[in-house]
Length: 482
Image (tube, rainbow, N blue to C red; front, top):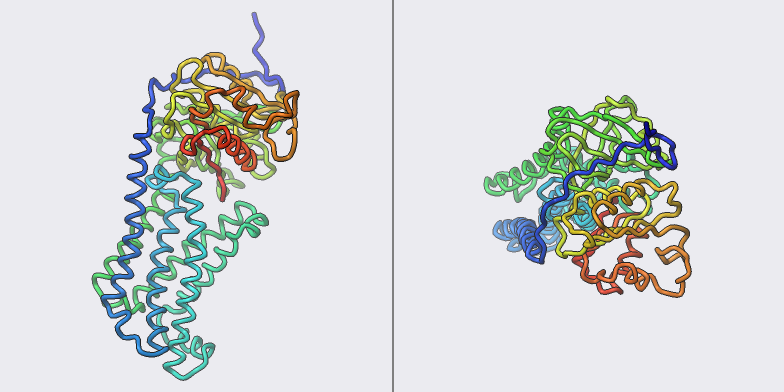
């Protein structure tokens, strides 16, 4: 009778490695990019058309015709800045709402980046609106701006809620600045950004009831009410109701928690008919453990194994916050999943050859991709960059997958040769990173490359790929930045 195999680091009994059947085939070539580009073009065209529409309604309503003095100039600026700021604010809010139809087009990274870029223009437009409307009223009433503003607060309906919305927007934008984000935990930042939804809600009565370009104009009111409802219903369903409803219907619970290394644990989430989530290897979920101390805190984690109809697996590294508590989560704990999200999947693949590059806790999505990627022996190379193989999560599983499927597996272990390099020190230190990469992956320029790891590592690998001649569209990475 043979004893059960134990983990080389934790000493715990290891589960037998059971793999799903690999995908039988995948569509290659650049044709899939054309389909994605058409979808992106359509979404962006709708966004631009909405902005052009609000400008058009401003013009046909005599927005420029009445300009004759400073007061009328300020009134025109006040109206136009309010309309464009509100339209951009709705687009910005929708981008960060993680709605699936947008996520499939752009992925988390690109949607988040566009959301951030819109933040300052929206705030500047709102500031212009705030100043111009107060100034124009002050001129009309022959008062100073401060006195006029106090009079407006007391006499104009819904202006107080509009002012509160303005203050909330300032708070959200300030906390989004890179320096501020570094000083905030994810949970604090997340709670503050709920104020963005509050700002939108508080601005609605002020705009619909008071705005001269909307109040009493059926066509304009229909447009804005429809826009608010569209954005609001997307957020309500996909961010709030859908995760709760679907997680309950599928009976999601933690079925097991297995230590993979001294600071990483695989959490198995089981349920009924999980294929209806349509999750793919390489994607991530927002996980919420329903316990007294953790139900209100959500974290993004990639699948660390190909999804099945009964189980989803996530490998969680101990990073000192809630992730430390997750290491000892009890089986039976209810789970709420939001997702799946991300385009770090085989759907973006265009080439026959694939290189999978992981570093540290970036191994989970790479491990999941390796498990069921459509490939023949020799088509895939796996590169795992780590400091110590004996304490690396999923290294043994990646090695076993490579062995069973006939993939090349390269462990790059040890300290870096210098701070700007992603390669470990060794006998060939005289060679640049790109040449060392080509030496182990000769077809790198004609391969799709999937990279997952810390941001600095990913950027260093991408630099090597550019030098080695790998086209940008064949380089895939996704960061859970906030």
